[in-house]
Each structure stands twice: as structure tokens, then as C-alpha cells.
Length: 70
Image (cartoon, rainbow, N blue to C red):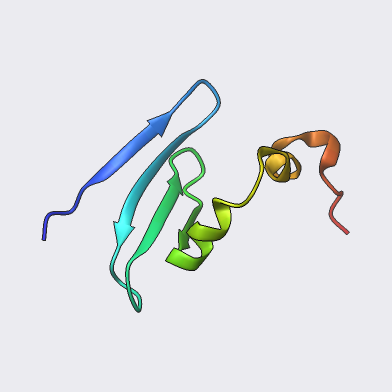
């Protein structure tokens, strides 16, 4: 099976996106090339993303919405 990945970038981030077959079924692996952090998402999680609005993502990257570590 051919392994392929896609690099997606802009002026703020650069990520690698690829299919991961190492678990129980296919998943999408997304890796931040700056930090090395990664996440795998299964089809159900990906489908849930299609129902989210962009405003749901604001707390993930806007410092005004960040909670200080306790």
C-alpha cells in the first residue's frame, strides 16, 4: 500500500496530514511540524467536525480564551 502525506501550511502553522492504519481501522493523523504534537481522529470524530462551526475553534488558538494552568 502506498503511503502518502500532505503538508498544509500558511503563515501561522504547518501540519502533516496522513492516513494511519496502525489502530483498529483507518484514522486521520494530523501532526504539527513545529512542535511534533499529533492527534489521530477516527471517522466518527471527523464526522463530528463537519457539524462544528468555526467559532467552536476560537478557544483553541485565541489567547483571550485561554484558561491559566491551575
